[in-house]
Amino acid sequence: MKIAQIIPFFAPAWGYGGPVRVCFDISRELAKRGHEVTVLTTDAYDHTKRIGKLCEVIDLVRVLRFRNVSNVLAKKANLFLPRGFKKYFRSHVKDYDLVHLHSFFTYQNIVCAKYCRKYKIPYILHLHEMPAPIPLFKKTLIKKIFNILYGKRLLRDASKILVVSSQEKKRLLSFMPDLKDKVEVVLNPISSTTQKRERSNRQKFGLKETDKVLLFLGRLGFIKGLDRLIDAFALLVRNDPSYKLIIAGPDEGEKAKLDRKIADLQLGDNVIFTGFVEGKTKEELFASSDVFVLFSYYESFSLAALEALSHNVPVCLSKDVGISEELMKYQCAAVVSDPQNPAETAQKIKWVYNERANLSKNCAVALKQFDIGKVADKIVIIYQKCIKTRSAN
Image (cartoon, rainbow, N blue to C red; front, top):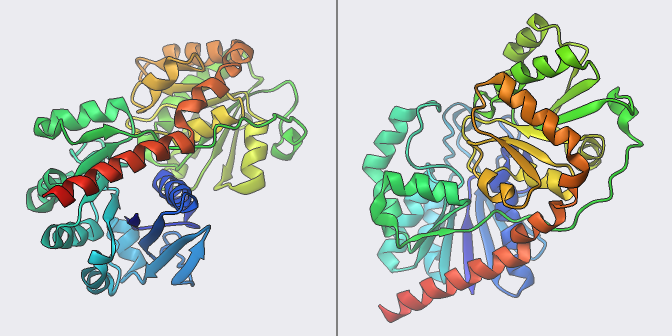
């Protein structure tokens, strides 16, 4: 099959989070199986830098990048406007058997859906975010307008809609019940191989062997619920100063507020900020941690939680994290039903820490359902059905 993957940012722009990793892993696996995969994306590296190579092959995947009009628009309005993209796609849409669209509120999706409809090329919409505007997020009015003008048709005309968890499926169908027959749950992939845990690098982060280490890994934005985490963490430290919290990830405007909160609660000696981490440093962080914590107000999935499991680090999540239900089944996680309650949250964290040896034993089994091979098998079947339906019509 000839597949086009459409996404506003692609490897090595890892700072944009889970969608980049998911698109990369799926594309690479499909190419390895002999499918012809082309990724059409922009030159965004982060909110300030651009990627120089506009055309390259990464692990058998052909990557074509188009220059963004403005990094400022990309940062402040999440608006990626790639020069020449519309012209190129209009000329080449018929080169593909199927088009796989990632994310939702994007200019690229509007363009691709238009020409896929015109030339009867099936497209799949892979949702890494919820189309229904969530009051917690900013720009809800803009999203409502997008849905009126483009979004609902974008959803209805898709051959299939992929969501990343059963929780996300429920959310989507509550927004548009008529999509029931189109929606498929496809879990985000990750290697199912668990890593051997080492403690030799704790000193690098100013930690002692006797410290009880909690790890948050993700963007420092309001939606990640770091205020919830710090309130609960303060209760833990009050009773046991050996608890330490590592907060790793790029700042999205929250760090100054967090610094003030940490100072007010006198937690400065117990909280470590690392900034954005990748590669060896990230591996060392997981190796140095006892519990992964994430109490987001909304999270469609959480690849970081799966990465923790791959290092045999059990997780403690809020009920608002999309994969919380899936992970609870495998007894490698605890879920906080009322993350606004610091006492309940602290109690669950403490329980996970005390039970970490038993919970860690289940990490490998839980990861099998997220194996890239298993996920790719399901995606290929979906592709084939969509192409066959198109041919029949």
